[in-house]
Image (cartoon, rainbow, N blue to C red; front, top):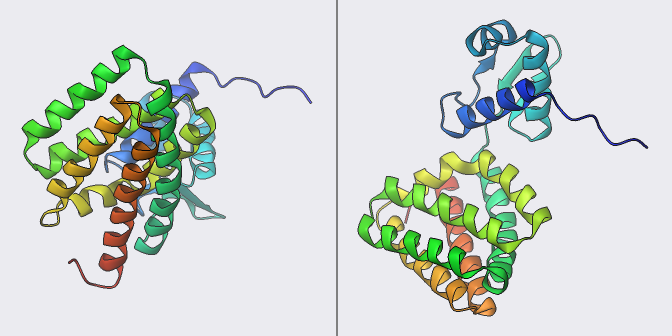
Amino acid sequence: MPPPEPRPPAATTLLEHLRTAIYHGELSPGQRLVEAELARRHGTSRGAVREAIVLLSNEGLVARERNRGARVRPVQLPEAVEITEVRAVLEALCAAKAAHAATAPERRQLRLVERKLREAAGDAVVYTRLSQQLHVRLREFSRQTTAAEILERLRYQSVRYELQVALLPGQAAQGTRNHLRIIDAVCTHDRRQAEQATREHWDGVAGTLRRLATGRSS
């Protein structure tokens, strides 16, 4: 079976733009994706937009319905809990792998994130951005390509809930403490502690989402 043909650069760029727009909320959950409008906005063809929408549908970010077009797929809280439970396992695996594989320059990058987290002093918005940055770095440093690819898709589906959790009282401060533990474990090559601290962090996020789903925030 021949390998799939590579996507043209224009299609790849459009896919990244649309994915990022969903990630940042510029395209909101439930919003209709109109091919002609997106083609005009991005200076490309409707065929390229159609291809990007199909790929986003495969990633679970877009829902397509016959005769009704495509919309940004809303992720409800129960699904977000499931996604976070999966992330807990895979993010912990990547942290353990990173504790083993991270190079000295990579560990210095993590220490820089550590310093910024301390300076953020529990600022929920800054914390959320640094948290996302940290976990992307850990996936890169783990050299665990399969887990990293799965996590890259999952994080786009649940990202809006990460900030929602961080904005709850005390959550950003607790998350910062968790992340400092993770960074220290990775930088000291403590694979077991890196895995445990990461798993506990994401299990805590999942627990908070469960409480939100039942109408309790504390």
